[in-house]
Length: 203
Length: 203
DNA sequence: TCGAAAAGTGAGGATATCCTCACTTTGGAG
DNA sequence: CTCCAAAGTGAGGATATCCTCACTTTTCGA
Image 1 (cartoon, rainbow over the protein chains, first blue to last red):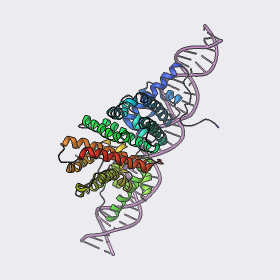
Image 2 (cartoon, protein in one colour):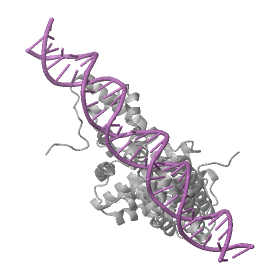
Image 3 (tube, each protein chain N blue to C red):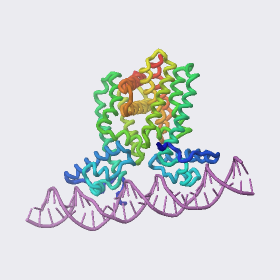
Image 4 (cartoon, protein in one colour):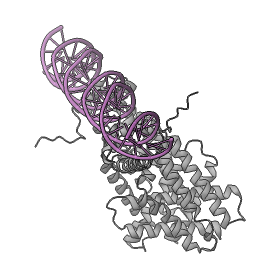
């Protein structure tokens, strides 16, 4: 069986220059995807934005889909890592801190990786990839919450994780809406809602 | 100035058959958009699905974008109308009823118009149209909530409307996720969260 | 009945994007 | 220094979709 899935790189970067190219290409792809969406971005444009030629782009990513998936994987790993850092000290946080951190998580992550949310939420590539990532994120959330509320059942914590995840998404959406009036107040209110909910879960 | 915006129909249906065609075309377009996304759906496919020819499609919709916008407008009007029906009796509802109805609103609407949420939330047409609709929906929500909590300021009710809107979206997302385990429990939990939040707003 | 306007048709022109390929350049190991 | 694989290049083939247009068919009021 020829190992040919759409995530395969045609040629793995081996020298330093290759790795730099790949990084530049992925970054350019991210920028294009945010600005124009998946179908709207052009392989030519991605290459140009990375200071490369189309040929060079296709050396490392055999397909536009492969490019998008590689980008998603990179982002996904980053999210899991950042969420992992929540684990240890989080047990000592107040409800207010929990609400603030959870609401802020996607918002802050989005500032560093603007393409993540749109890519994972609503882009028409292998939508299955986005689903996988959302589910794993939910599982991590569940574990995180369970640590703080060990008296609850797994089912309860799963449902709670779902709700918290949707609220995180909501906060990110508020942050992302262009020209939204009263954004700060709305974000604080979202935080209140999160706190009110967590009170029921943890209290 | 020739009245040429992308919402224009090339020819307004005048006979009954024309109106039926337009309806069929819009319905077909909705189905295609849900299944394949905006860029993924083909004008030829829409026409075929409606039992028409491409030529016929272009008689009424000069552009794919015009088709999508017309569909959005149709959906938008339906949402406003349905939300309007909330107005009168809602003053007498309990918090539980409020939570249930608000969480269920988009879910039920989506069952009848599956393309609405994806179209308004995350499709790359004139994204400005989706923004407008979301904002108007938010305003209606604000008015609805204000009726029940007249003692709050406009700013407070606006922020509350934003939060409620995000939670409604969240509920719809839960409902829409394919193959989600524990969906019913998650939806109930979302309802609990809504109720907990409304308690702060109305209480 | 008749004719004009509405509705319908589908081949194909214009365009755009994905991706290939034959070739050149680069840089580091021996 | 030499040599070779990695890295780089960009014109153009293949394909696909949007939309036009010249034409036919249907409908309906006079």
